[in-house]
Length: 321
Length: 162
Image (tube, rainbow over all chains, first blue to last red; front, side, top):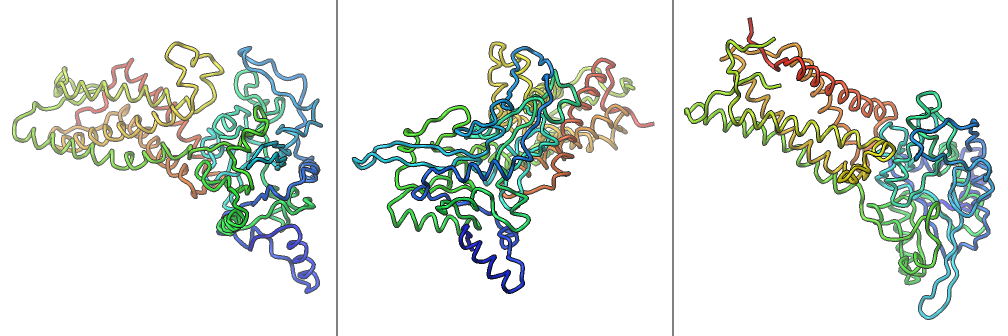
């Protein structure tokens, strides 16, 4: 069952009245990825979700050591947001969710829309799968997270993220204990959909704080079904069902996303709403070739042995280096 | 150790082709494998003419997969020929060959696990992800070192059994 803030609170109160613990959404769908539905029509841009996110995660924000290590080579720039922690109109290491504003013309009408933006939590997240250290991980609940204890801040996760979501803070993390001038550059930060709150049976802070119930969380198939039902009802559009092979953040909008994408400010820390192909799929499709290759090698060798046995090929030398 | 008394000094044409294919693929796999670390752009290597693609993680990953498929075919080919020739020609892996073969096996196993991990819906434990990533990187570095020592010292893969 998908859970919004109101139904969650009702359920919790009822459960308390019955002296029974409320079922946490994560436990209710332990075998399934949880996705969030963001109904753009409902968002009023009040920023309650942003404030709640900052408050809920404040104790996890970086406290960098200064002065920063001298970086080598000189082209490596430090990324320091510690003096600009108040910035909340884009993603930063201290702001994992922001409100994006769109002013568009659709069907001859000028429309202003606002939407919360954060990590899309891809079904097959490149940030997780391609992290060279295993610092980024995905939970069975569909959360993509970065472990600040292991991350070296190389920013590969951001390079491979179709939306450039993770944000770096220099002067913090494991790289300081290794070779800080030559490898690494801090820690990457982003939304982990309030993993610990979910594990404790709660809701992500942004969902709980929203006065308009813009967001709903539940098993991905249910969330997708709800998104499709809303889209059918309003003649709307869905973003996240297929983008990058599918994400666990699903947006529903009354305006086509290609129009919305033209109406938002995009750039550093401000993700787009453009179509995204499945970035992991291209190489993954080569897995069959990897499986077949040894068989081809054995078959080739067998043919060569047969040919040699018939006296067609000279005997092979064996001291190749 | 060299079994040059029993083994022809000059390889056949297919043997030479296999040797150069092996070296070329090792180079390509190492180049694209280390390209998975954020170092080529930082250290200007991708600024070299014709090397811009090395800073593109998607391009290096794709080439790494393609090269790995060819490398697996070559390994299987060589292993089959060795197993077929081992008894009739009384061959065995030299110490250097055994070490390199073991490291190649570690690379293949850890690489296979990484390929599996990269599919959607596959969840490895935190410890396994880190162990596999570090094992692949460590085995690659150790193999390259062992291969370099073998090349310099002209140490063969196989030797004549006693």
